[in-house]
Image 1 (spheres, rainbow, N blue to C red):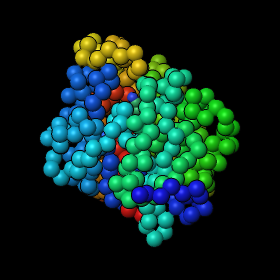
Image 2: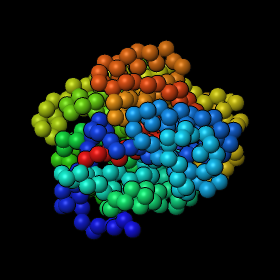
Image 3: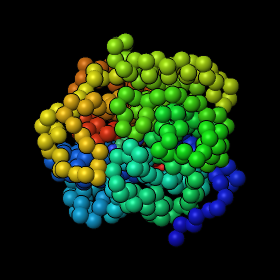
Image 4: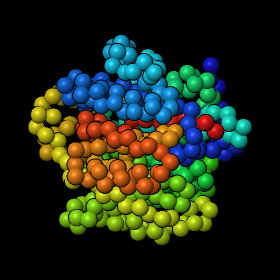
Length: 364
Ligand code: KQY
């Protein structure tokens, strides 16, 4: 049985490596809920399978599927991918899975955050989320990794680290009254420092417009390497994303990281604004327990929501004119990795993208 420690990663000498450090593998979940994924989740399953296959060219991938879908997932996923039975309420491994930490000899442990489906009954996305809450513990059992239970309601997509002591997050999410209303900003920051073993927290204000996670940073901005970040951008001053990205640019440009460096900020132009189409809504099951998805709602599309694998980048494509320049930019920013694009509108329709559905296991 994987042990749960009452101490903290900081006390025990564990830290969260950056995503661009080497991985042992990657975890994902399998989508199935019909009120979130249209047409009984079939198009989403095809998109998840493309992502899993793309990542598996670089590192081992494990996919957790519910008992009714295990056989189907097994049939649709390539042989090289391990498929295990794990119940979940949806398929966002970044947010419900453990955040892995390592110590100097390379031992692996995982942080199990408190999860409330992105806001609980105050703006959350679905109810109940009891199975999601168990996912991190189950993954840690399978990985034979010990566990920390962190006293913070939050999700893995709400922060990024540079592996050298710096974390970026957004106030829109972590200071939202629907996550940790009983804690001050300083107390939240202290918990981030204690559990992720970072020394500097850079607070941005807002994430991507219409992002149902309350502005997860993993859709807005990420580290490319220590001292360099990539920010989703638009030149259209009439787009509500403009002010959000502009403000983030100012905050990032004024910030220093844990080692006192000024950050270099690269801009990646977002795809043109995308909206849910009528036929996409028609394929959804009716539900009173999940967020309604309506024709014409803007989708929180961003190229920043990519996964960094060993020797590769798996990035979202949207059949948009900005796809090619985005792929070229990522190829320049990650010269030692092969950049692979996956058409991911079907994932975006569920409210996230490739980074949100993946969780890396660092080598340490
Ligand atoms: O941004 C993420 N890490 C996850 C997106 C979750 C969307 C839930 N429908």
